[in-house]
Amino acid sequence: MTLPHERTRAVIKCEEFLRQLVLDSELPQDIRSHANHLLRHYPSAAQVYSLGRLEEFLTNDELDTEHLRRITAHHQRMFSSALNPSSASRHDVER
Image (cartoon, rainbow, N blue to C red; front, side, top):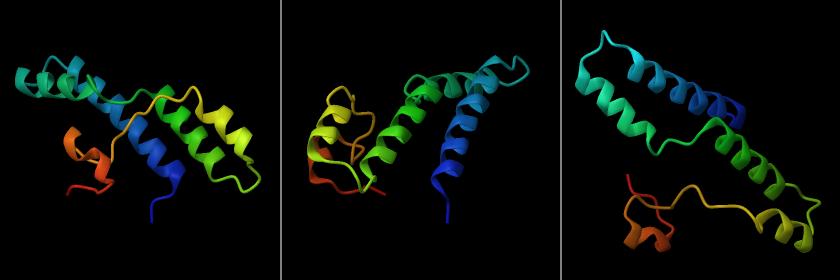
């Protein structure tokens, strides 16, 4: 089972890896372009840590409603529950 800190490390390391691919002039241009395309929408380390902090707050048993409201008031959504915008409201996962 993957723990949250392991997943966080993997996502951040993946961003670093994609950046290395983009800069490696010895790789074919199509590989570098594909890596660059993926990076256009890839979360930054700061965004990953921010989402991690939010999740830690949301799973805190001592949160009251007012505290929760203040925490989430300025949060911008990063992810959707689906790959297709028209089905995102169904809260199902496409595989």
